[in-house]
Amino acid sequence: MNENKPTRGLASKGIEFYPNYTGTSSKCLNYLTQIGDITKGEREELDATCMDDDIEHSIPGIRKKNDAYEVTFLYNAKEKESDYQVLSALEDAAQSVPILVKMPDGAEYSNSGLPSITINGVGVNSLIEAKAVYKLDGDWQRTFPQA
Image (tube, rainbow, N blue to C red; front, top):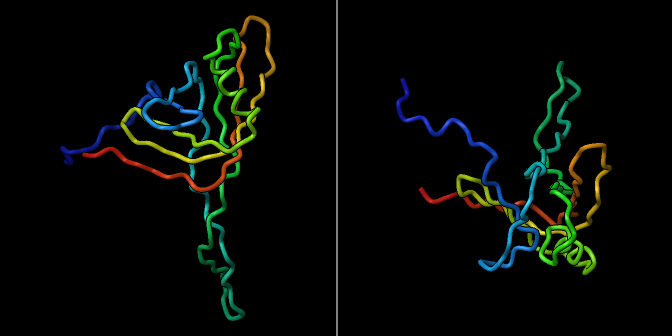
């Protein structure tokens, strides 16, 4: 029996998203409710089937870049430091900014992209949510915690 198993899994409590990560003075979103998938992209399959094969063959190709990353948060635009006002200023600047996702285990995932925000449709007796979608510039960089 394996007595030295790693932790079974992590709860989502404690995930932080930094919408414009510029170092230790950066602030994470206050009321984050959902993050998007963090993926380096699936590899394409290249057909390598030859005339004398009786079954299809393929080899891995390059990875497809994930074009967009989205986060959902609770809407509030009253205060200057509210999530919505901070993200609105980034959207209005129309420039790519660095983003960072910190996981509860200390792992960090960074990228950069141009943000766009929307207020989601609202129903009766529900909280208003907004969404920030980043058009990503490139690949996610991973930093794992030191053991």
